[in-house]
Image (cartoon, rainbow, N blue to C red; front, side, top):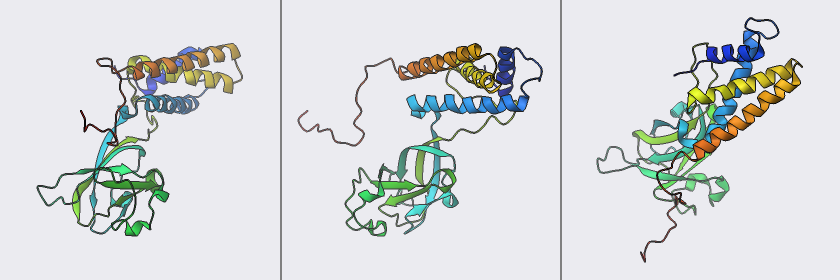
Length: 244
């Protein structure tokens, strides 16, 4: 069953034993609820990056290397998980290729503008990409530089930045939300009790419930794939199967 900001507000007030506004206003509680909602979502991403995976596309422009939100890059990117580019969309036989990340642009030996002619970088299967900036200022650059216009030529899988629960009806996006939504409430109660300099023992209790619950949630997410044995995944193509 979906859980909303109003559910959190009511639950927090129940734990505080304050069903109507007195020591804490609804605005104050909702602000702290959002703080711990972001904290719980971040804990989810830390253990299971792909839980919030989102897919977006944008166009390439001939001889244009770098792209920003003006060209259609999402402004809510927190982590990039995968990038593919089709360098010749108009050709029905052209398939997208995976681009490998350059984690530091110093890895590009020559100037970025000469990236098509002899730069020594690890290009993986089809090329590389680099980034700088964050969210609305994020820039993505490609090596090699696309030489054709291409509609939806770039496909990006990414983890988005969470948005606040802005209204009472806003729903929490958490795994196993019927259980894990209470973590948001535990954290909020502990913070409010400390902010009000009240009931330090109760604040400690809810802080422990929050911390232990967060650890338990991450443990369960870590073990979510239980149908097969764990293995190390070769994502850069270094494994040699020539003698297999």
